[in-house]
Length: 393
Image (cartoon, rainbow, N blue to C red; front, side, top):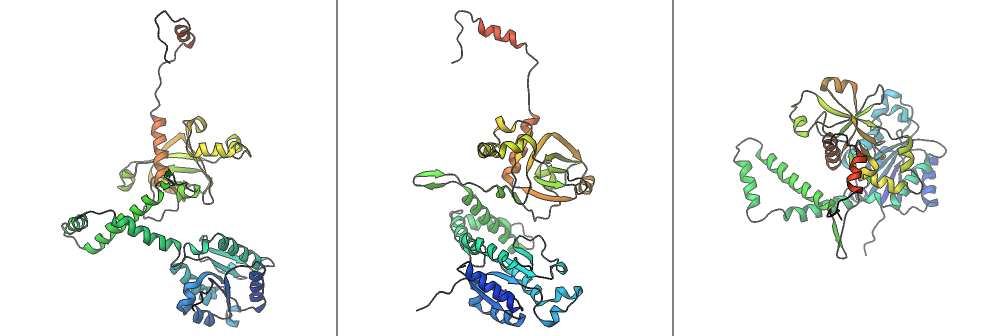
């Protein structure tokens, strides 16, 4: 009979009291995951090379210095520590939480601001802090989502297969390949891979975000507000929907130049609007203990009776403070001046939210209206209807 082993957290720590502290805390919190302690870098290397151990790995807890030589190293030597290499290997090759639990954090600036890496200074409460974070991720099954062979990886492959094979009928795949080959340029295999990979990923995404039938009724997917933004990694220095900030005065602005112009660098000046942080009455309204939830919903969905025609609301999330795009502040600026003044890209809006921000800008610019009317006279026509006048029901 094969007994399935538990998931695994690996601790690299040369101090016996620290190791015991983690073991005790895992026991006290009744964490349903194994903790394996390694005393030296060699012990860790040997253990992690085992395929079974690698497959069970869900999180790492790493001290930076774990030998007498490393404990006595100076600042210049810190990045030669074995733990620094182990941390980087897992960060690049796996998608698991990494907790750097050390008294030498001031000498280690790699992976700063990386969301899957936590740097925690050793202190009286640091062991409990690390274990509570692991407990939260364990209780919510987060540890099984992004890891190698985890839920996301399995679901992606399942969805890619289902979505991809349903994209094509008869000879369509062959026709696509022939269209690429007909160009006759180098790198045909790379181009074929690029096109079909993009078709697969796009079809998976569109299926994931579309409504699903539940008990005979279509149920729309509900996005977390976090999903309205992303940290763009493409090579464009500037893109439509990017929000930048000035380091000098913290002023924020959003790029609204059409994508076709940005993509081809075909513009004289960038089209921009200010992004204003929430405050005062607007902030009070959406944080009201009773009515705040409904007000927030109407702001996010851009109910103009709440947001007005001048603003487009941007919700607050952990990676962005949110605010409103103020169309009255629209201005233009040359690219070279823009990148000098607004030197920090904070976040990028999803295509969906970018499209809606641009849509409302065009609506704001298209406002019409007629000459001022004497309303009391107009009212007289209605109040003194002649016989035979048919009012609109």
